[in-house]
Image 1 (cartoon, rainbow, N blue to C red):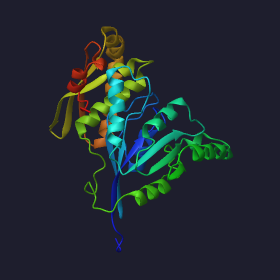
Image 2: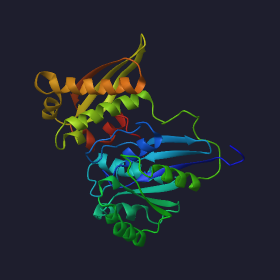
Image 3: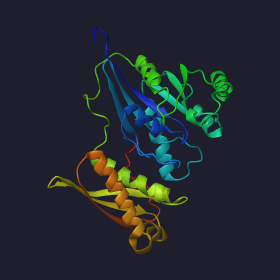
Image 4: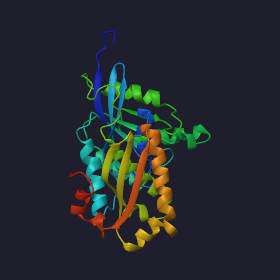
Length: 299
């Protein structure tokens, strides 16, 4: 390392739902470690993405989108995870969407203002802005409003300006050894990723509000004859939702299973046998006990 001190630290990524936090984490890591969907509140857990370079390691904390009006127990849980996972980080990335800073963004800013860590504002989705000169007044407004260490416009989707962001983050990290061995990209295991990929396919294939009443629980995960055998239960809140998930003659459930299996095979580079069941647990998203049963961490 030519005498350069190694730097390692944790970076909390916060923002309102649907600003592209998980896409940003995946782009910086260089592999999909968090599921992504165009619907708000897709991320429910704290997930670590690890970026290791010759002289630094960034541990990115992907958190659920912070949102006001969280009435359900699940929504309150997600807000607690986002705030609790961020307080001890070495730096905060506050992600906003280019040309948009509304009441929800202001609500997030009110939650993190006053924290002592270095704060970097990331203006995401700049690839949607044209001409680029339209960004300048928006960036000036953010500079006046938020006393950040830096404001960095990026596109997590195309990778634009991510190298600059990574270098800036590394410079903010304390000196110290890496927290994870080289080659480790996330703290989550394969059963967790299997459940999340299934939930992503459900979210992408189901209409309106139904995805928010779904949870996926892995009941069996085993290696047999060089393939992964996975049995998963999709929990819904009402009987009518079960019929929607299954679809006519089971076609929707079969398609969701097919898409999830294809992605898991590509991710792990080995055969996957996946079986899905749909079960009902009334109003599970309003039950602390059900959240614990389904693997949502205590906060």
